Amino acid sequence: MMGGYLAETTWAHRLPASLKLALLAALSIGLLPVDDWRVLALALGLVGAAYAGLGRRALGRLWLFRPLLPLLAVIFGLQAYAAGWSYGASAVLRLAVMVLAADLVTMTTTMTALMAAIEPVLRLGRPLGLDPRKIALAVALVLRFVPVLLANWRAREEAWRARSRRRVPLRLVGLFLVETLRLADHVADALDARGYDRPSRNN
Image: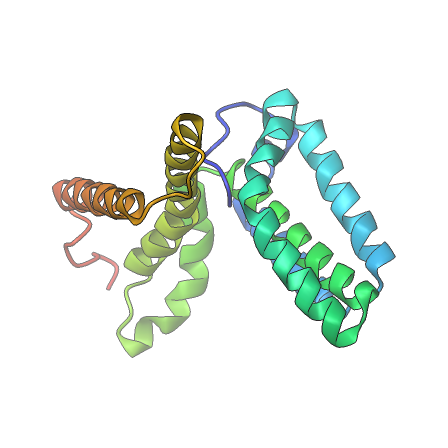
């Protein structure tokens, strides 16, 4: 979930959103018990091949993975110290596969399609007073805006590093938070204008 929607027509775009979400869930659950780093490396290679199959723009998005490398290095170090390097490699590879696979789904699926795929499952919570339409919208917004916010922060960080070799100051974090709040206000106003705060007719 590291970038926005890829506005192209590829084989992955043509797959139903429900199928992509189901495959993502199956992949995530299936990789949890796998401890062999070689199997996980193969899975990572297959996900990378899927990116390559979507074209140059999709393959270039792998560069967005760079901000997560320090975190993965810390995870590898801790796991390797506690249980050996192979266990650390497995933990890092598993996380990388899940993140890239999730980004593969979000960049080839529109928000409308995501909502349509999620909402039928959320209808099970209607007897509890939950509004599946609003929850589906919330989930879709999270899937879509987390990559946008990461991209905005990366742009600010790179602009700062191009001007200075000093560490990123807290002031830059504050500006980023202010911009995030403004974006949230704009999104809320747009949703209010489209009537998303009104009770669903299906309730």
